Image (cartoon, rainbow, N blue to C red; front, side, top):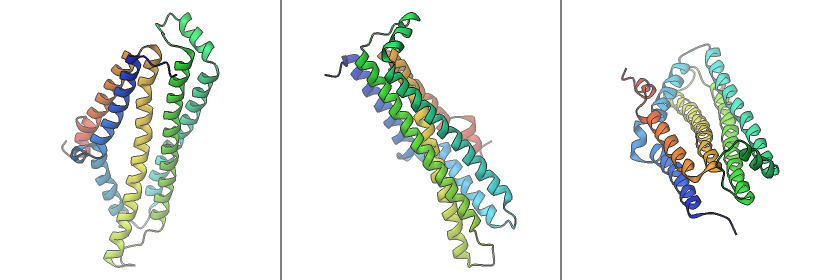
Length: 228
């Protein structure tokens, strides 16, 4: 039997509701058109239009390489985090003893500790797959940039199609990168759960609030919408 207390169940339910609810609001609800990600998607499209008019595209490939390198860094970090999660699973007794030595008010059983560690590890596995796929999509974007026709070589319709292809692939890569980062952010409240379920509730609420502010009300969002 899973040793969940009523407060643990409430905390886990609130955590999942907060994460999924935030994802719905930002990515699927009518409010999504006001977030910074949508604004940046328009700038990605503008980038591809500018690229189509340039004869030399080394700058553009350099930008893509930079995006890939950043994604690769987070993918590598995810692997390290997964390893740490498995280490927590194999050293449950030691971890609980250390928490006790630090006078942390940890009130949990070894089995519940392992469930928490498994959840944390699963989140980092999810983030790794998102970062890995984003890296691959940025690679596809670089291929589409390499295959970009020059103006005058193709019809206006074919050029527009190439622009949309590259812009959509670039946007999709950015979206999966964002989902990976979101997994990192929402892993933080799970650490609070190791101490007390109330900390998980407070942490999930705080993370959702901070991310919502960044998406809809931050200075960067205003800049991205060109309302400086």
